[in-house]
Structures are given as C-alpha cells and as structure tokens.
Length: 406
Image (cartoon, rainbow, N blue to C red):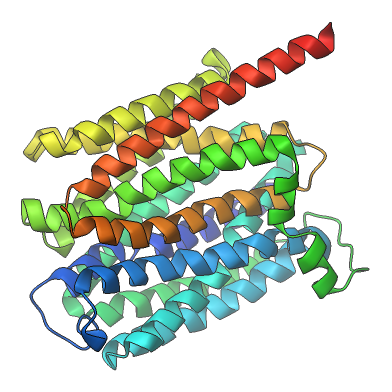
C-alpha cells in the first residue's frame, strides 16, 4: 500500500511538471502574436516571432540544464531530498513569472521562466522513483501510467492557461505556483526514500563525473539519444507552433487552442492507460515504437490539409501515436541499460526532450517568418527521420546479438 501512495505522489509531480511546460502554449501565442501591444511583445524592437521563440525556448533550456544533473544527483543524495528542494524553488519561479508579466518586464520574465524550468528537471526523479518501485509495480505498467500522468499535465496545462488567461495572464502562473505548493506538502508527507543514499562524494565531483550527459560516451545510449533527440525536435516543432497555426490560419483564441489541445492530450492519456502495455505484449517493444513513429510523422504531415471535425480527429490520432512511443521508450532504455542508475537514464531522456524543445523554439520561430504551417511540416519530416534511425538501430542490434550467439 505504501508503494502505491509513493507512486501516486510521483504521478502528481509528473502532472504538475508537465502542466508547467504546457501551461504557456495557449497564452504566449496570443500574448506575443496577437493585437494587444505591450512592453513584452515590443521589447527592444525585436520581432514578435523571435520574442515568442525565446520565451518558448528558455523554459526547456532550464529543464535541460537541471535535468542533466538532478536525476543523477538523486542517485547519490536521495530521491526525496532532491525532489523537495526542486519543488520549493518551482513555487518561487511561478510567482516571479506572474510578477514579471504584471510589470511587463521581459528580461525578468525570461529569467523567471528559466529558473522555474531549472527545477522542473525533477521529472527525471519522478521517473526514477517509479522504476525504483519495479519490484512492487510492473515497470511497463508504471511507465505507462507515468506517461498518462504526463499527458494529463499536457491536458490540464493548456486548458488552465487558456481559461485563466481571461482573468489576466499572470493569474495562470499564480495558480500554478499554488498547485506546486500543495504538491510539495503532499510529497513531504507521503514519499519515502526509494533509493539507497550514497553521500560520500562532493556535489561538484558528481556534477562533473556523474551527470546524465556523461552517459553519451556509451554507444548504445548515444544511438538512443540521437533518434530520441530528432524525434523530440519534430514533436516540439509540432507542439510549440500548432497554437500559432491555429491562431493565424484558423482564427482560434486562447480558450479554443486549449480545448483543441485537451482533445489530443485526453487521447494521449487514454492510450497510455489502455493501449501501451497491451501493444507491447502483443507486438514487442521496438516494433511498436517504430510503428508509432511512422504514423506520428504521417498524421502531422496531413494535419494542415484538414479543418473542423477532420482536424480534431487528426489531432486525436496524433496524440495516440505519440503516447504509445513515449510510454515505451523509457522502458526500453531502462531494459537495455540495467547497469546504469535509473535516475541518470531518466535524466538523459528529460534532457534530450528539453534541449530539443529549446533548439526548435528558436528555429521554429524563424520558420514562422516563412509560413505559419512550415513548423508542422518540419515536425513531420523530423519524426519520419527518427523512425528510419530507430529501424537502423534495431537492425544493427539484431545483427550484433546474432553474431554474439554464434
């Protein structure tokens, strides 16, 4: 019973962390690309596209830096301690963001988003705790539920952002800060340490020798990083910029963007709970991963051809394929690297997503100057390329395994 309470805390942290990532998407597009002129979207005469790009990029950049060492540090100093510290600073980050918006201070807004993102690297701790409970909760089932919680965050975040923005953009961030504060108290009370603590190394030595990026020296992990990075570039090109496409090409406001996102993420959540484990058992890990990638690329590529109900159906199907991939990749990564701490491994996956998020935010904002639909096509191409790399990786591993048996 205690294990399930701990796991429930992990799910709550995951929901709030991913909601924090998704919260600004229906807010920032109208804030920077809409008709309302303010000091935020007129900062130093920089184009609104680039100001939007920097605003989207800085948060995942913070997660990239935090995720590169927070998960690995939790392998040595304990999951609960690191999780509590990061939640405390997340609360301050959200309230500072709200203040920056009310004062229309763009530089403070960027700093606050970066600082909040730095702490949201605790997603890797949440995944590591779930894997630590593997002797009590099936790992595939746990990762499927973690993915479902993540997609619930993508559902709650845009909806909350879209509707709360009607009362003032800053209100959305204030509510987020209160939610994380409640989560902090729950974690403090419920979670017990799930990993043997090893406090015999200094923090600086661990940051240097045991951060998640050090894992890239290993060929198998490097291969996984490459195709996951390209996938994340494609996914974020799609996810960060379809709100702009909906705003400019379909005339959607914040609430309608949030509702469209909710439909997609609801399908993601249902697929994570109902489909991922069954598909893995029936088809196997890699075949399911590859199929999900191929269909994701196809659906993103044809989305701009649809409107109305047809468009919503494509959004829903895209969500299902992305959910299947995201639910299985952490399990596969853990299974083929059992000699490495799950904190570091999950930290690397978090880092990969976030650096891709930051990179594509800048390049996607430049692509907006060409066309609002261009980032969507770019996302489809990148995910298609990722599927080819996964196929190559699977074939090479099959050949190596066959040679080792001989």
